[in-house]
Image (cartoon, rainbow, N blue to C red; front, side, top):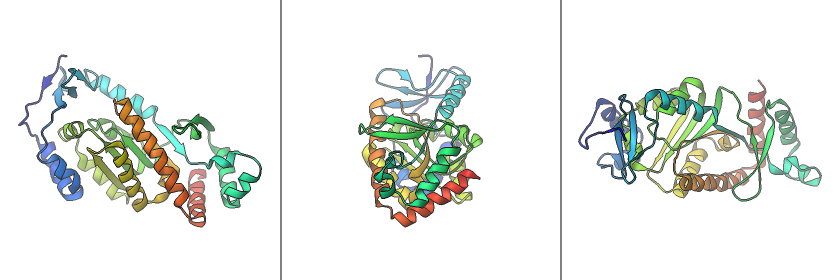
Length: 280
């Protein structure tokens, strides 16, 4: 492991500016990080001077050993980002279920959305064993809502905003040490300003359990725009498969509750608006 650990008492201008942002815009996160001392994961530098994070228990690093390889990894993550449209499962079932569960407005919008989707609908098995319907990854520049599970050092987020237009974003990082490390690396103020200047919002959920994180994300969605769960991208950069699995499972359950709790008339209006936006 050819890396250099950053001293515990090191502080740079990026860190100080991030603390100022958090104290004003994300006070709950500020309280968590202001006196935090990393333990399990520490910020370090690769041989070429690029930032990395070392797992102190097994001495492995989270990122490749050079800035060039990290950029390539971020690009692969963005290209493989999942994109989901929330088609009612009963929509693809012919017979009485279609007419009973969906209004004529929904049926028309679903039909035309399916027709204009370049990659079509892919059926996969959901975490509950039931079918889930996903849009195959597409090269589209607009994302109404992006879920980021694993902030890491945040470099992938800066690249994302250069390539995509995102209205709302929810960033969940369960590992406090890793999020703390990101405060030295990227200016979170840029991300905050990007969304606030466009009338969108950014949610930061740090250091909580996967289940609680998703509940808090659900609260953010309801306050921002409940329809967000019907069309979103998901960028996963968490290296812990068990934690990621718990996040995905909890999110699926939370989305199902959100979907069912929406009134039919309001939901139809919003879906129709999305349909026109996508078609145009």
